[in-house]
Image (tube, rainbow over all chains, first blue to last red; front, side, top):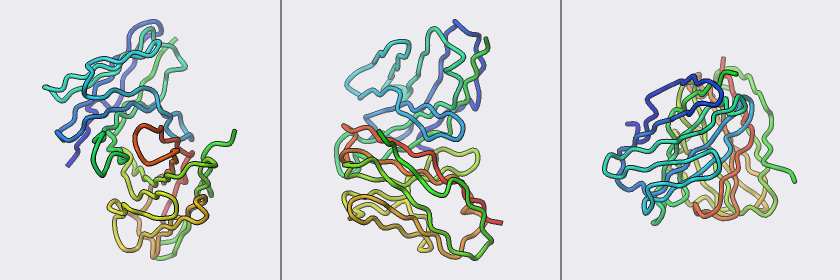
Length: 115
Length: 115
């Protein structure tokens, strides 16, 4: 039973355009969401996060949007650059309570930014 | 500064053999996590250490899997009597403390292949 779903295994975008990566979740206990980026043969690196008290968080070219009622979040990258080509994982966790360290990950979306 | 390191980077073993995977976390990080990523899947949580204690072993898939941590530093994940379904990338992460306030830093992983 997948609690975090990334339904697009891959996405291809032209350099300079916007990349939109989507993530859906089913567990109502999740109230903290993170995006990780992974290059081949490296571990995932943290990119950006959002807690459920917000609906948007922005960091430079990266913006995460959260729609709690739809249990949906998205990562926008604008403008996209070839160096952004990587696998992007969505992850979620409860922010309070005994398991506020355990991340549940989606399967990832491979983003390719073409020059 | 040194990041999280893992060894070996690749391990091929025969079904039924035991394997040990090592993780060296970032110095001073009290929290340590093991995840695994099977082909085409997201990262699955295995176990969480706070110091040398493991308050959450809920993700270990069977009693063939065990882990320990010593000196609030290095951790080893041991898989006994390996099976083909154990083939995966095993990732270790560490953080300053065991809450999401602190970013989890991942190592590059150990790719385990059971033949």
